Length: 239
Ligand code: CA
Image 1 (cartoon, helix red, strand yellow):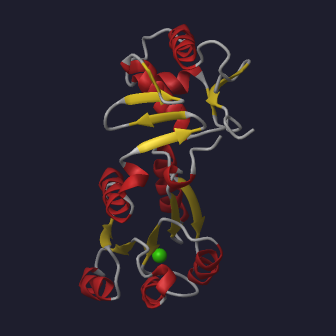
Image 2 (image 1 turned 120 degrees about the vertical axis):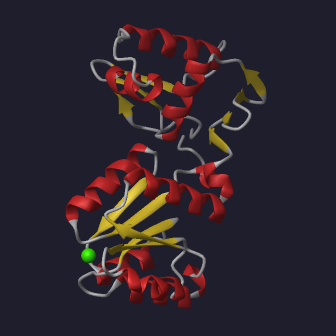
């Protein structure tokens, strides 16, 4: 099952006509578990926003079609999008426009070139403010519930005792249901820098996680794809 309703990964729309920057942002946001959409024209952004509302918009100031400031103004004028978090991007030299950006209702304002970690922090902060349950709280999939704050995992109401590595492994997989990660990717993301660790270590910890999650006849939510790696089964709990 997908990480359910409220706790589904936040969706971010990037409206930016500098494709290298848009790609860089998309890459970093996806790495943090966000669902990312991109478009490079203001008029196209308006169509997307009308069709499918994201949880946050990163909006460039100068865009072909309709300008970022105009889009922002229109978003604020409509009830449905009045509260939508917006981060405006602008080039150095346009800083004098900052006041104007904030006056049309952007929630935050970032001057290029900016540091990507800094922007990521602002995205998190804005989303937390707009919808605390999306970031802070719990991840649910089927009968499994993972609470990031208390570091507890429950299945059908019973506590599942996981070691710290198994916890991080589950947290990582459950955030991106359906995606298969290689052992190398998991080592990188879950273990961090320890490139010296043998890839079979991943198998050992996945084995422990499975054992803890699926006692007896309970469905195994972890998928093994031979020759590829591991993932959280996106159909889990959906039957
Ligand atoms: Ca631009």
